[in-house]
Image (cartoon, rainbow, N blue to C red; front, top):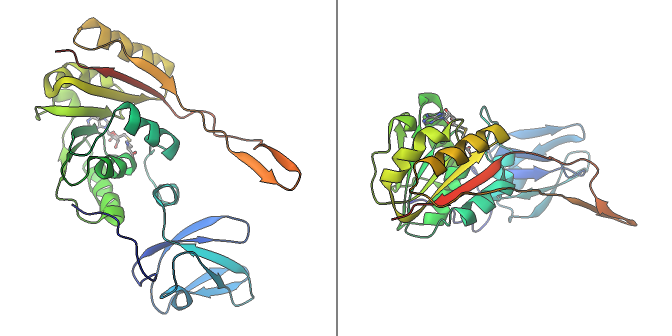
Length: 263
Ligand code: SAH
């Protein structure tokens, strides 16, 4: 299993986050001899390579940047993405409400851009296992690449190019986490795949989908009544005398719906 072992000076080939004087972030791959162009002159990659994480660096015209190894949040928020990802504000609660634990066997669908997959792999740890179902070959490949960029090669991660609406092959699965449009098709398969007491968690943007999912879970029996909630993240602006919530916030992503398999 791969893993992050960030230590020592920043190396050529590593992805780093540059934070400009206004706090804007850019993710770049450090390459010897390469400049990073800014409107305040170039910043040379060679001036960054070999510096400690968290260093200050200067452009030719003296603008000060900061350079960091990306945290998970910085990595996913700065990815050039072609698919919707689950945002960090929701990934944290998903790990807790799906109760992802070290050693767990987890099935997720689909992998998309791989943001959730990274945190599921970190949470199950080397003793656990993640199987990602993904119906599109292109997303299976890009998801795999993103996971590898952040975690390295993970021997306990399998990606299956399959439609999970057609079934789950695994048995004795501890947790099933779904981020796809019609998760109700997966409920009977999850009922077969999950261990008694196992958890099924879905992530759905619209209330109509939530209602359909909750009705489906209730219909067949076999699961506890779902818990449904959304996560609101309200950043604050704290500068000088201005100490207040920010004026504009990202108000909605999706609802979380979780239930447990009965024996
Ligand atoms: N959770 C991911 C984003 C997933 S986007 C992340 O955090 O990055 C939703 C993905 O589900 C898409 O890649 C889509 O191709 C896939 N998908 C949709 N229906 C599916 C199905 N029936 N079986 C497997 N994957 C499916």
